[in-house]
Image (tube, rainbow, N blue to C red; front, side, top):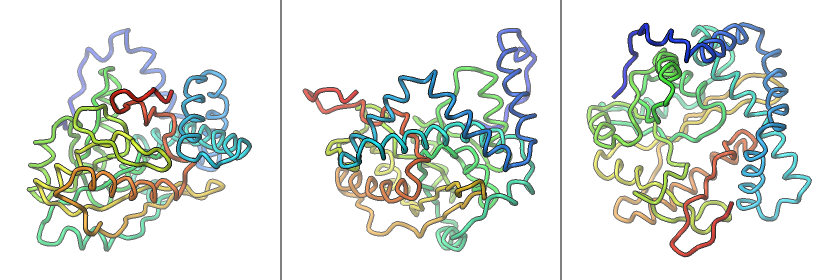
Amino acid sequence: MTHPKKFQSMLLHRRYWLTWFGLVLLCLLVQLPYPLLHRLGKWIGRFSMRFLKRRVFITHRNLELCFPNMDKAQRERKVLGNFESLGMGLIETGMAWFWPDQRINRWCKATGIHHLKIAQKNQQGVLVIGVHFLSLELGGRAMGMYQPMMAMYRPHNNKLIEWAQTKGRMRSNKAMLDRKDLRGMVRALKRGEAVWFAPDQDYGPRGSVFAPLFAVDQAATTNGTFMLARIAKPTLLPVVLIRREKGRGYDLLIQPALKDYPITDQLAAATYMNKVLEKEIMRAPEQYMWLHRRFKTRPFGSPPLY
């Protein structure tokens, strides 16, 4: 479990100077008015396509795999919109880490708070089902202002980034849990905590089953949700942050608790959860992290998809 760490002098070493420059620039940048940040973020995203050719290819390929009936022109528009969202994701990271609470509240409106209150009756643990939208950092900050959570994450190799992201995320949340720390998540849920967990990425063959996702028949899907639900018996509650069009802010959507989640069959549970994820992704598909090689893990003997 990771809590905010005290600043260490070793983070001033020259190896981190470039990272410091980026963090300070981001902090200053997000002090601009939000409508300007919205336009700037979209421009950054479009500009980044010139240098992120591999990620452009992966985005194209993921959309082609998931939506084979989408025509080429429509797919091109989706890819452009996805990279505009990527640029906004960078801006939103700065907003999440450096904005005061009142400014977050001004631009983020929550619906479904009553679902969260119902889920936490009798101090029951809540497994918050997250989705890797590109506004993820801001979504975690906004959700934590209503219900401070613990969240699974992958520790960063850069110690300064690790310090900064932990400090930023803890502004409205309790602690970070290594995504491999299943026992830590179970203990937190049994104590009645809300734990954020995202089952929508490819975490490799270990601890996964192959279940349908959109038009891909066999997508490696983590068994983490299944294990947590079976052992800790939490309420499962999907939560996403959706960016409104034309720079009008954000909607934090807290959904009703999931019903009839299978806890005796791993494949049925993975198939069920992927249907939930599909529904959430389709609220704003351009804002989803299509840059991730979601289908890199394949069944034995199957050809690679990238």
